[in-house]
Image (cartoon, rainbow, N blue to C red; front, side, top):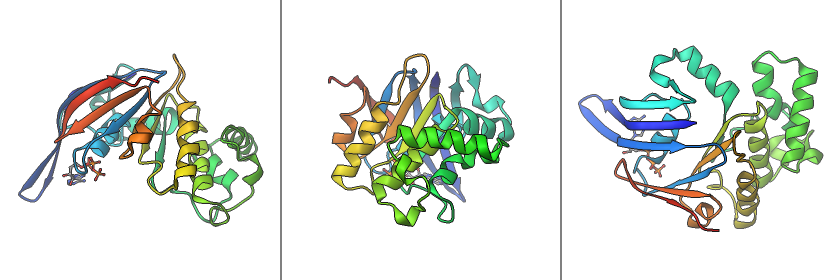
Length: 227
Ligand SMILES: Nc1ncnc2c1ncn2[C@@H]1O[C@H](COP(=O)(O)OP(=O)(O)OP(=O)(O)O)[C@@H](O)[C@H]1O
């Protein structure tokens, strides 16, 4: 469903060039929970941005369900992200003035869904992350683990085919990390959804079905994780 074919990403700042991703070929299928590990600066986030249509490669190809990202307009790519990909980041990125339910509903509201329907769907997603009882709470009334569960619910609200997570447990204690990882490990469904997670935590990688290691912008290894 998501493919990188000899993908290259080069950043240029003035006369300085950084080869963040130097030719990576990777195919992620629905049903998989792929974790990406590697040293700081090795290109993990850049790789995730390419797979999530947040960025386009400078060379090679990034393909989502057969569609080449470079052939899409910015608007088409942003609709792809809105409707078919969910994102979870280390910093939760919840809006402080909205309740949990409103934060989860926001992507649908921005897409034009009516408020009643959007809040109904948000309630379903909050139930899925076991937070129905926090629907009317504001982010500053919740723990870090709860805020990240709201962020997972928000990522699921459009029923996406891929959920991309960049260090989702980076700000959480061990117990909350475990909860989030357990939750994420239940999201992949064959024929429906894949989860891709960048992590520094080897324990986090043990929740995945496949571990990809990146070093110096290149794929170092790609292995099935034994349960
Ligand atoms: N927008 C940008 N402009 C210029 N250089 C960038 C940009 N984004 C990333 N880089 C550089 O590309 C390289 C790879 O960065 P990336 O963030 O993908 O690594 P990472 O493995 O995710 O690192 P970390 O684990 O520290 O988050 C780094 O050298 C970084 O400085």
